[in-house]
Length: 116
Length: 116
Image 1 (spheres, rainbow over the protein chains, first blue to last red):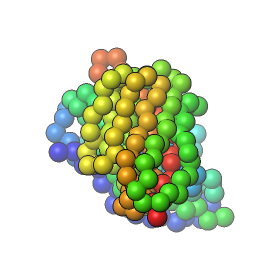
Image 2 (image 1 turned 180 degrees about the vertical axis):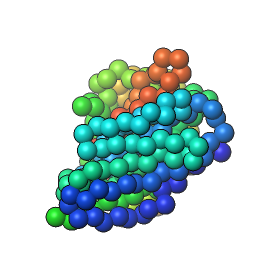
Image 3 (image 1 turned 135 degrees about the horizontal axis):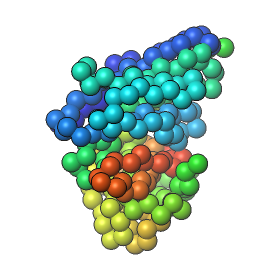
Image 4 (image 1 turned 120 degrees about the vertical axis):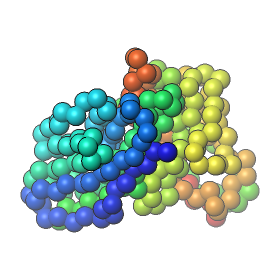
């Protein structure tokens, strides 16, 4: 069975602080994909990143960075110098290659509030 | 920028009414999905489709039905709405990845349904 755990339900930081959102996953598949999505107050989900299980290279995109560690089954997301516009719910998700349907299994989300 | 649309964005309706939530995408994606999300909660897959004339049930049992007569269109229907159907419904699509790669899903803005 697959499972995604986002232990942090809510996080509040002051603007310009760095913040890390944790994601731990479980899967029996050797080939899988991990995703992060952002859901602002408007409700839509915005795709941020996809990682496959064979690529442990960390990625940086502007103020965003992701740390993928297979040894600890974690795929953490860091926002550097946070801004008010970063306030949203962030979801980590897992997709197993064997499903064929490309179904995503979402964590429960972390609500980030950036205080000006 | 993803081109996936949902209408209506908000719907308040009485118990027993039949409703159809519309979802369209202009990206030519074969795969489409419907998720249900209660406020502050994780997303649950209720329906998905591999392509035209394909419909499958997701992980969360739902009384809704879907159809896929055209690639770009994936409407969801509730024959008799009840207060327990009150939720946000999110539509998504993805392209089939080469070599079985699980591509990211692009989400519509969602429909917030309230059944009185």
